[in-house]
Length: 353
Ligand SMILES: C[S@@+](CC[C@H](N)C(=O)[O-])C[C@H]1O[C@@H](n2cnc3c(N)ncnc32)[C@H](O)[C@@H]1O
Image (tube, rainbow, N blue to C red; front, side, top):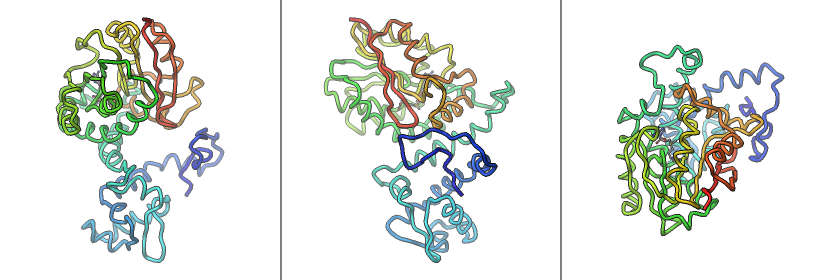
């Protein structure tokens, strides 16, 4: 079954979606969640790690995981059908992609992020989507990051996997934008510091203050101490929409905040950033953004849908709209770049000197 619904999956630059013509293509979308679950359950059962560097039968993999053989056979059959593993005789091996990205400890491993944040948290949130759209949410539903992060265990689970996922993009951001003249960064909704850590590592004169919810910053303090940056990265617990911010900072960063707040709050966040940044300072916004003509990329569009499932007043943002908001707040020399291909963009500008 061809599960890829973009034109040429192997070419990362070409992510345009073809208009659908066949019922089978609709089935691939409708039943795509089954493939997601095949991947997630395999991660929970350590399948890809157990196949690292060797091939094994379903019987052996079942014994490794301590589960009945019939269930592992069904899982392995599904994984083989969707291309995550290959099969020769009774033995399964990892596909090259599974080896590179799903084996624990591999250089580009993001299995824990998929297993913990995407399967345990994002996947169930999608059950709320219809109620969000029709204004029929149940009282227990999560309708904001603030409510979600009140739960200490949820905040820990989310932040642990987000941290790992942000260290790579943080390195790219440090290469893309010149922070060398910035003394003090205010990292609004900075989580556990994945981006601040990379920016401070790359800019020896930079210190950062991270503002995020109290249950998030508890873990952040540990993460920052582990990498020896506790003297340069500090934390403030609170809701960015309500808490007082430090003033006279050299830069403000908002990464993955705009999609997780009501759209109406975004212009106020930009104005607030303008007020606290020193003349000549920098304002950086990083987030899932669809193109100005709303043609995609499909993963950016789907991530915005995912945020809508727990942020009913969220807005589907584009680079032009974000640039306009920044200009409207007084920022100039605005630039736009892709950070994570097919998913996120960075928009940045400067407060006039
Ligand atoms: C996807 S994480 C991104 C963390 C970090 N900015 C990064 O890029 O790695 C989103 C973060 O935004 C925080 N957040 C969302 N809404 C917030 C608000 N109103 N005030 C403070 N933090 C908020 C969440 O708690 C979470 O840590």
